Length: 293
Image 1: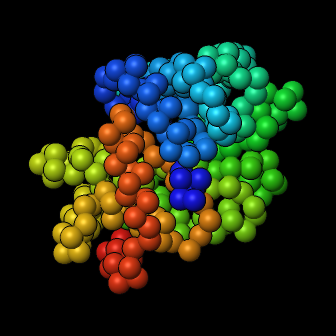
Image 2 (image 1 turned 90 degrees about the vertical axis):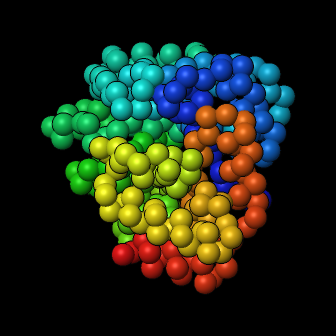
Image 3 (image 1 turned 180 degrees about the vertical axis):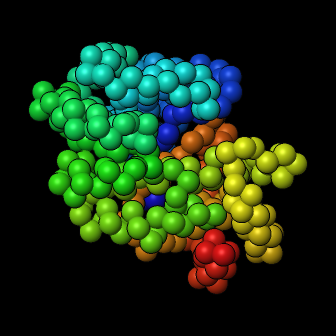
């Protein structure tokens, strides 16, 4: 089933992209579970997402999903605000709080959040601490939660991490991961999570506002690619989000896709897009040609 490949990301539900209704966030998580989505990703940095997940799980009567959270980045309510504490004590307290808030004894995956923020000289200590968490049974698997710096490859080569989650590196407007990290991970049996399938809204509801005023984080080239993709979608009578979602299903690789809805309607629309299945090969080729410049 398609939905078994999907992961519910909770940043939007937690309030980092804007104010949310707590009740609706809980209902969205329950709706995802009812739809067959079997994995949920959260983090202390995602506003109140861990709390909403905990409330949803208290009401859920089915099998527990695969649950992942993160350590290293502290709580905030804005995606562009990043506060970090990678000390042993802070990460231990963060993990304990995550487990308590979610209401589970251990995480299925504990991600090292934003490894690019870690000074390389501190990496060994930090990663040793994560390994101890796993040895203590507080996490079953370890993951890299964010686009990783070059120094991290040695730890991946050594088999320390079981999962890699990257953002904005595998979607219709950016296929960089097809040339490097995705085949690398799959060749080493490292599970791959492709986050931001709509490139932080660029391939979704935000493209109109981005065309009027491009945000600082968005490269001009990425916006130009998105505009060309929008034209491809119109030509084939598709919505841009539907085309972007189905494109990921069309790639001949085994990986998971992390959705980022802020409410039930966005979740439902995304699931409906994926349930339409793969794109015709001619559209896949046009997207790849556009994304590769």
